Image (cartoon, rainbow, N blue to C red):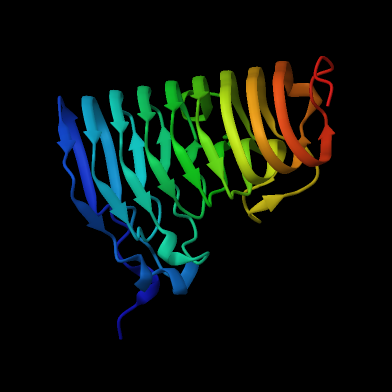
Length: 281
C-alpha cells in the first residue's frame, strides 16, 4: 500500500546559478486540491526553491494551487522577484501553509509588485539581510511576517537585518505586519522599517509576539523569547482593522521602536504589553 504520509517534499521547481532570467505569461499549477483536504497528515512539496541564486530575475508568470509553501528562497543574493500572481483561492480556507515567500540566509533580495492570494504568510522571514518587500498585494493571508524566528544562538540563521516593507496592501487577513519569535531561543531582528502600508479588513494591525511555542504551534502567553527586537520603525500605516495592537513582547530584549503616522481605523485598541517604554500604545 502506498504510504501517503511520506511523499516527496519537493521542490517542484528548483533554481541554482547566476544571471538567470525566468519570465513569461504562463501559469504553473501545483494541483494543490489533491493535497489540501489531507492537511498535515501527508508530506506536501514546496513549489519553487531558489538556492544559491545570484544576480537573477523572475517575473510575469502565475503560480496557482500550490500544495504547500510557494517560494523557498535560500542563500541567494541580488535577486528580484516581481509581477507574479500567486493564487490558492481555490483552497477556500483549506490551503494551509501556502506561504507566498519564505526567506532564509539571503542578501539583497527584492520582492515587488506581486499579487498573492493565499492562506498563510504573504512574506515569512526566518533570516536574511537587506531585503525589500514593496508594492505587493496580499489577500487572505496571515500578513507580512518575520518569524517564527529563534535558535540556540544568534547567527546568520537567526538574524533578520535591514528589511524594508513599503507600499504594500494587505486585505482580508489575520494580521497586518507581524514579528513572531520563539520562546527560550536566541536571535536578532534589527533595522526593520515599515513605510506607507495599507490594511483592509485585517484582524490585527500591528503584531509583535515574544511568546511563540513552535512545538505546540501557537502563542504561549509567556514572552520568554531571547530574540532581540531592536530598531523597528513604522512610518505610515493606515486602513481598517479589528485590533490596532497585538503585542506581547519580552521587555528585556526590545529597544528603540518608533511608531508614527499610524492612522488605522480599528474597532479596538487591542493589547500592548512589554514593548519599549518610548512606545505608547
